Amino acid sequence: MTNLSRWDPFRGISSFQEQINRMFEDTLRGRTDQSALTTWAPAVDIYETEQELVVKADLPDVNEKDLEIRVENNVLTIRGERKFENSVSEDNYLRIERACGAFSRSFSLPNTVDPDAIKAEYRDGVLTVHVPKREEAKPKQIKVSVATNGK
Image 1: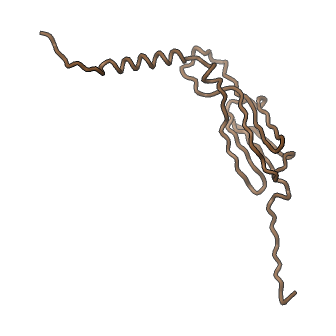
Image 2: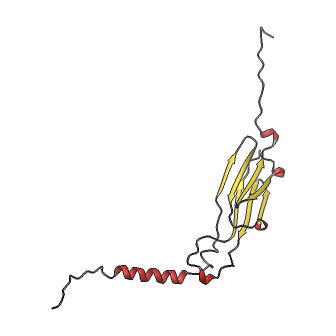
Image 3: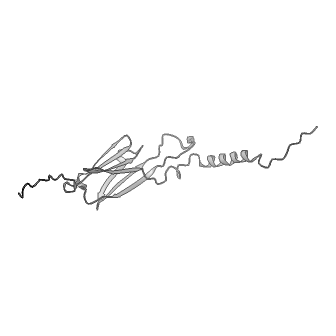
């Protein structure tokens, strides 16, 4: 006796989708020339206090020797490079999502800062740049005297 089953036009689609996915993964596996070496820009936070502007940039796996910080014409520029990890063979990678390569971020600074007093520190993958304000730009407390009886 022959078993009859209703024809399902979608029966083979899931295995076909898996084959397509495998084909793309095999093609992209280990390709560092496009996905990992693309231009990238680190995430940056900038905040202001009464004394200074503070710029914080996330730069994990960036060597401090590969960082350059410049101020020119009131523009702060942070440049650097995150190098691709060569300790692992490209053939062993299953997925590469972290971008590598050179980056550059530039920020206009107000005239109220002192570019000669800028300091930077790099700790735990975070670059912190302190941009002090000029003395004349810092808030000042003014004492108010009370006049009594016309004096």
